[in-house]
Length: 275
Image (cartoon, rainbow, N blue to C red; front, side, top):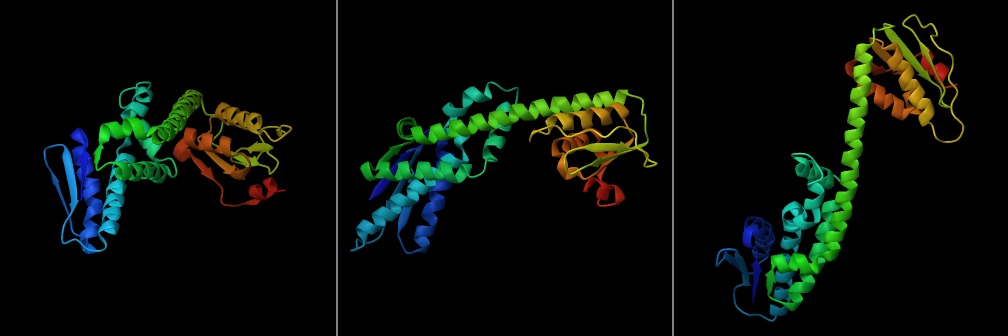
């Protein structure tokens, strides 16, 4: 029994992953041999004497080859399934495709899901044919895998756009704070459990009026007000007490002020905010 994979330019990936799955079979006593002959074609066959388990050995060989093909495509989808991602890469600046790939690979469960989809299709295909032409297989048998990958790429692209917008927003705030003459050495931000906050100077004197939390569940307006107030003061250091109540504002201020930002581990101001 011999299986052939016509891999073409993807032979280095194919050889790595498919032979990686065939190796364990030999250690289990199943004779397997493989060779690239002619160039671009990987031949995998069973060796040894025929036995009453011949049919089972053929099934095991097909499963191993299918797993190898699946791992190859799941780990190098940007090459093998490039028709699904290239249009998105063109939307980005130089090096955008590589950044997009990193964001896609970071999506939870992507490799396992993509590998599972390809493995099922490869197993089905090898039941019908002993010759798998990789280009044709990808084009005509992997529509579901390509659709899944396209969705993943779109989600990653959205995340990249948001990240870019966040970076521009942080840089804008940082520049505003740097250009302002510091009005305080230290500003203590006391955040109450209900989303209100108050600001104190280094002498623990209140330097603003308490700001009420907005009605409803949306806390963004209050967080925007806090960010604007601290940027307006442009202190040399910022200390937040009760950071968990306004996470967006706290994260933003941390990125703007960097090493000059800190969260208090617990003090009397923290107790005031927890009331």
